[in-house]
Image (cartoon, rainbow, N blue to C red):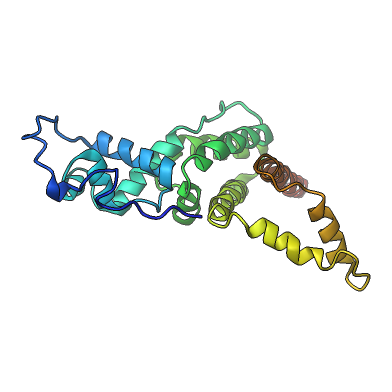
Length: 247
């Protein structure tokens, strides 16, 4: 389940209101980079929605208004977190054929996004609004243009990226419901021998053969991600053939 927000007087600190000033404590001044770095750490530990500005300030041993002065409100801090996370995703070289280009970047992106729960949803909802996304957008659309997608290049890029990021976002959300898979299997199990509902019976059999330990579930999620990316690329290839045939 989603971790409860850390208490203001928790192990993260007693809260800026109860702390002496950084100057009195002989601590160096806070910088915007420090604020984002600590917010990234909190995101790795609790997800992008699992911390507050006050908790971030406590972790920095600073007043909340210092964060506002250097970075802005919480949305601005989250924007900085997403900027930091996206910058970690390696961008394939420009001469990589487009199917392999997307395979590489999307597969490399998944574990990075999963380590920063909630950032994938931010990207899906807000789009490529962070500057660190620009190199990937430029290279990816460029690879599609060279292949012949023409004016369809932007839509294909969005299609492939959104498929991948939405799958990661769904994984992130499922972390809040650790028993959902077992509950679903129990529901399907009631149809296992139901000849009147062959589809449900088959689903029950297939689900019942899949282990529910953590390692197996993670492997299933990874395999489903891989298959989804391959099917999506295959669909884009069909569109490309249609575009080229019309020319």
